[in-house]
Image 1 (cartoon, rainbow, N blue to C red):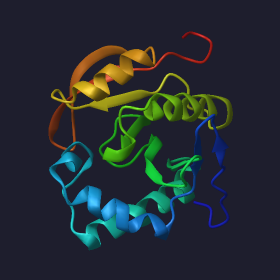
Image 2: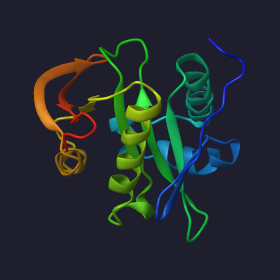
Image 3: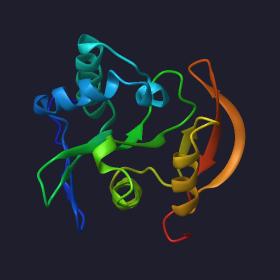
Length: 173
C-alpha cells in the first residue's frame, strides 16, 4: 500500500473523471438515501455515505486504481462515478458505474465507462475486466452490451445473485 498516490484526471468531451472529494458528500448522501442506490450497496445513512467516500480514496491508495467521480463540464455538477473495484468478495477487478438521476439519459455513463476502461487497460494492467450486474438492472445490462461486454455467467457478489459480464480486451471492441 502506498501513502503517496495520485488519482489521475481524465477528460472526455463532456466529462471530467476526477478524484472523489468531500464536496461530493451531499449529493452522494442524497443518492444513497434513495432506493435507487440498492444496486450499489445502499441505502446508506450519512455516516455510511462518508465511509463509502473514504473507502474510495483508500481503494486508490491500496490498489492503484479505483472509482473516479464525474463532473459535467458544462455545468460543473457532480454526476456520479465510474471505475474499477477490487475488494474482498470480488473474484476479480470489476468495472462499475453509477449516475445520479439528473445525469441519466445523456450518454454520460457510456462516455465515462469507455474512458475508464481504456485508461485501466493502458495504465493499470486491467484489460478484459468484468462487471457484476444485478438481474433486475436493465439499464446497466444495456450499457454493458453497448460497451461490447458479453454475458459470461450467473454468479453471486456479497451474498446477492447477479450476472457477470465480460468486457472486451483493448483492440477487440
